[in-house]
Image (cartoon, rainbow, N blue to C red; front, side, top):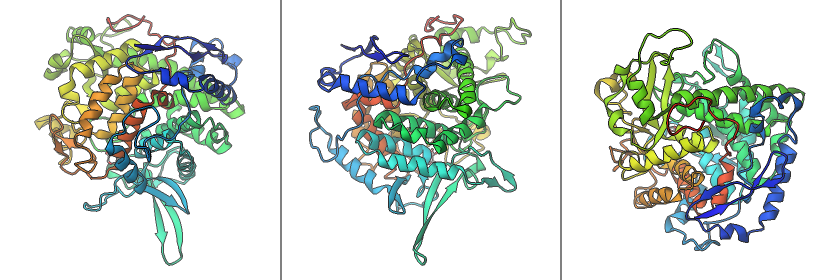
Length: 562
Ligand code: GLC
C-alpha cells in the first residue's frame, strides 16, 4: 500500500492528507515534476476560483466547498498515452483493444465548419439511425475525458462553446417556452450541399421520446467545464463572460424558489441517461448526484463579481441542505433497512421518525437478500410515502466522485459492489440499475415499454460506458483492483461484439436486443477507464475532495460519520 500525501489547503499552501490508494506504484508519480504540477495547480486554483473566501461566507461553514479542489495536488495535466504507443511510458502493457478504440473514437468525430465539435452517439449503419447520428451532451462526456487525458483539449473547448451557443436559442415545445438555461440533449450538423453551408440543429426535448428536457445536460456541461479547466490549467475559458453567464442560467433553473419542501430537484421521468419512462421521476438519485457535483464545480468556477456573488451564496446554501438531505434520507444499509422495516406510520409533527410516511409493507422482497452485512448505497428515490430501493450505478458513482457520499459511505458503496458482484457486474460491467422491473410492475411503471423489458436496456441492462465511472470511483476509494477485474471482463467481449451500447440478461451475457454497435460512449468509457487505471492522477478531472465540514449531524447507522 502506498500513501500519497499532498494537498492544497484553502489558502493554497501545501499540507498533507492521508489519501491512501492501494496497489499503485505511486513512485512513478513522484518521478514526475510533482512540485511543478503543484505549483501549476495551485496557481490555477488561486487564479480562477476565488482567491479568498468572500466575507459573506466566512460564517457559513460550508464555505470550504469553494476550496475543496485539492485532490489534485499530485495530479498532472493530460498527456498522450495509448494511441500510437504500443507500450505506454509507465510500463503498462497496452491492450490491443486500445488502438482499435482510439481509431473508432476518431471516426466518430463530428466537424462543424472545419472544427471538431463532438462525437456522434453511434457509428452503426446497419440499424435505423433514429437520433444516434447526433452528438449527445451526456454521451460526449467520456469522449471529452479521453481527449483531455490524451492531451487534446481543443475539441472539448469547441464542444463547450458550441453547446453554449445552442443554450441561447429560443426553445419551444408547441406553444410553451422552455427556460433560458436549458442545454440541449443533442445536436447535429446539417450540410447543405447546394449552398455548401453547415448549420447546427439541436434537440432540447422537443423531438425526444416523451418530449422531456434533459435535466442532466446542463450539469454535465458544468462538470465538463471544470474538467477542462482542471486538466489544461486554462482558466480563460471558464472566465469568459459567456461561460459565466451560461453557468448562471443553468443555476437559475435549478435554484429557483417554488413549492419545494426538499432541497432535492424535482423532475420528470426520462430526463437523464435513462430517457424513457422507468419510474425515475420525482427525486431520482442520478439527478440529485449530478446536481450536487455540478453545484460544487460551479462554486469552483464562478467569479465573485457583481452577478456571480449572489449565485455563490445560493449554491453554498443549497449544497449544505442537499448533502444533509441525501446523506440522511437516501442512504441505506443493513441497520437503516431494519429501522425502516420497523417503522411506525401516520406520525405527525416534528418528532416523526418516519418522516415521509413510508409503509414498511412497501419494502420489496428482494432488498432483504440483496443488502449485504457490510455495505450500503444511495437508494433510487425518496418522496412522500415513497422509497425506490433500486440501486442505480451512475448516481452512486457520482456520489462518490463528488464527495456527496462521506468516505464511510463511499467505502460502503464499494463493499456492496464487491459483495454483489454477480448481480451488479455479472459477465459484463455494469448494471445501469438493479433489479429489473418485471410483470405487473413493468406494465405499470414503464407503461409496457417493449424496449425496457426485464433485464434489458434501461431496465437492468448492462452498459459498458459505466466502466469509467466505476473505475473513477474505485480509484477514489483506493480499490483499483475492483476496476481492473471489471475491465478484464469487458475486454473479453467488447471488441469482438463491436462495442455494443448495452447487454441484456441477469448476468449481462447477451448483446442487447436493440443495442447499437460502435456506440461511442462504450468505446470512450473503456478508454477513460484504461487511462485512469494507468495513470490515476487523471482522477482529479472528475473527482472532488470531501468537505470535512459537511458531516451529517445525526447518527443513523454504523456506516455513518458523525
Ligand atoms: C439512448 C440512451 C441515452 C443516450 C442516447 C444516445 O437514448 O438512453 O442515455 O444518451 O441513447 O446514446
